[in-house]
Amino acid sequence: MSELINKQNSTMSKKRRKISKDESSLWWMYIPAFTAVSLFIIYPFLNGIQISFTDWDGFSQDSNWIGLDQYKRLFSDPLTWLVVRNTLLYGVGSTFLQLTIGLLYALLLNRSIKFKALTRTIIYLPVIISPLIMGYIWVFFFAYQGGALNDVIMWLGFDPVNALGNPSVNPWIIVLVNTYQFVGISMIIYLAGLQGISKDYYEAADIDGASAFQQFKKITLPLLMPSITINVVLNLIGGLKLFDVIVSLTGGGPGNASQSMSTFMYTLYFRREDAGYAATQGVLMTFMILAISLIALIYFKRKEVEA
Amino acid sequence: MKTTTKWLLSILALIISLIHFIPFYILMTTAFKDRTDFSSRWLFPDYVSFANFFDAWERANLTNAFMNSIIITVGAAVLLIFFGSMAAYPLARVKSKVNQFIFGLFVAIMVIPPLAALVPLYNLVVQMGLINTHAIAILNNFASFLPLTIFLYAGFIKSTIPKELEEAARIDGAGTVTLFFRIVFPLLKPITATILIISSVYIWNDYQFAIFFLQDSSVHTLTVTLSNFFGENQNNLNLVAAAALMASLPMIIVFLFLQKHFVSGLSSGAVKG
Image (spheres, each protein chain N blue to C red):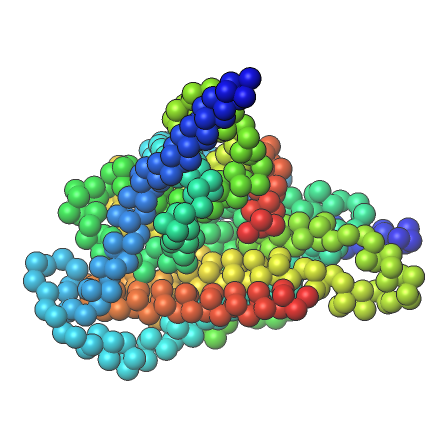
């Protein structure tokens, strides 16, 4: 009897060993994915750092190692500061708006009101439209001639405005359009967070006589911190990378007034045959996005711990 | 909640919906109006005309653009589901140092803007002889959407697929390939639906890769076609609006029918992340 059990035990442990052996040999399953990502993202990215130290034009065979010259050029180029400023405006500006407006929408739609499903659908709908096309749609709205906005302005008795052609206004229009398009994602993430907060907290707060604002500040906001963190990081990365909607709304103009780092790189590479410098801009852009998202992530994660 | 508050908030929701719908409304009135009709874009035409749609389809060669967009979207989505789920499985199941590093690498890649690596990527694609091919559009979209795909699959496998099930199958003698494709993959259906839908929307709407790697008109996707068409018809925006509406319609329809997958996928990914 005991022999039989021992025998069974030993086959069982053999099978167990076989399982763990099989598990550690699963690594081949991510080789195709890893190869694709290495070839099309990691290698070009590393190669870009290398090209940023050359004067390569992007087409010819010869390129010379010129050390930090492109970086010196980068930091002395007034255009760099303009496009960095715009990129920050698009990233931070739309993040701020999406965070606050998305939260207000989520708080509203988390209550038992009419038209809830309809409102949620309509707010989310722009997310699925191509940002390029979304830009064109807003051109129909903002266009100087025949634009919907100017119809209203003229009905009110004012002179029509050329909003998209005005360099001090159009970066803000880009922020607004980007916010309009993606505020639905923030809203949905907040709604998921709100649904995870237990009703008990509010009931207890009611008994203690806490006001609605106090409840929001002491219960909702702290418990919503994980959703806020995700929204901050997602919106920052999206806004700092902005490209399509700028192309269709303003084309980066007038002049270079609304260029972001993405559209500026495009101009450098294709119109001016200045690949070495474009690569330098790419390096700056990547490290900027990386640094800003990391700082935001760490800052908001800390707040989560406190809550 | 008091009934008056409830109704006030409901009306507020309705007003917000109306404001958010304005761009779509303007798109429609513009698309349905004749070129000679200079009435305000706020007003719907009192006639029904599909002339712009036929005209735009013909002149922008939308048949070609739709075909290219469909081929690229389907191709990249199939690769994503197949190789993405396969890659996520060991990363979710086996907690070795190497796997943790690889998973971290995939997540970190999400931060790199595709355009930052554009210069060398373009060079690489030229050397591979893949410029102006469907293959490169498929591969680029596949690679850039892989990190998120793996992230979502890994989260789902960790939280919902019971390990005991796989162990039982192993004791019955199932090999890794059988185990994964016969037993695990079918259980991933909900997250597969979400990934399929979200990735299709992004690939369908891709402009950044398409504008660089698909310069020949025979391989132009909808977005590239639209941007060229806009450039040629600056003074006939009615035509552009009709083309824009047609290009967006497939994804609008998909969204309206499969809305819950968009929403549930986003929130589950968000809560677990």
